[in-house]
Amino acid sequence: MRDKQADPAAFFDKKTATTFDDIWAPLAPLKQALHLLMRFVLAELPEQARVLCVGAGTGAELLYLAGEFPGWHFTAVEPAAPMLEVCRARVREAGLLERCELHQGYLDSLGERAPFDAATSLLVSQFLPDREQRVGFFSAMRARLRSGGLLVSADLSSDMASAEYRALIEIWRRALRFCHVPEERLAHIDEAYGKSVAVLPRAEVAALIEAAGFSAPTVFLQTGLIHAWFAEA
Image (cartoon, rainbow, N blue to C red):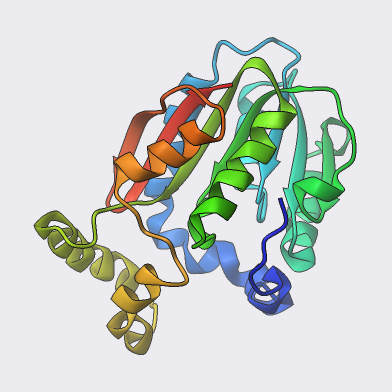
């Protein structure tokens, strides 16, 4: 489903794309924990599994999974051309081009493919503040999966009206400050998380995934505000 928000390339220009991984490197242990648990969630997929990575960015989860499962093949979908070019360079450097298809655009422009065994979408759907559109995003992935295929999705999640959120957001600010995020941005983080980033309670995120035709999702990881779910098509 096509994102009706601004063109991602407006946010992920060449400079942002080439420095993206370095900027967030101080928080790499959070990403590594997510990738490790995702590996175990997907471990029983077929030896020649086909995996769809939606909003693939610079290719972090693709590269990790490709290293862990040498028989798997990947289709990476990313609307921001500069991010996909970084992904392509990393995939080429790793010698994985023969196992990867890289598509610049959205799922609706990917064209017909055989059903996938799994789909990943890490820190992507949170940028769709319209709930109907967010369900549509998950539905588009559901339509690409075989029956019984797995979805792994991760997003920022919390009840922003709760005491838990107020405690966690202070920890989260410290984490972002650790990555040298400007203080001006940190001062307006609550406003951003209520508008341009759709931070919802985890039960509501799960309901959106289920409304798209998946089984009731299971939370398999929380690191700060990041929550990760898996569900079956």
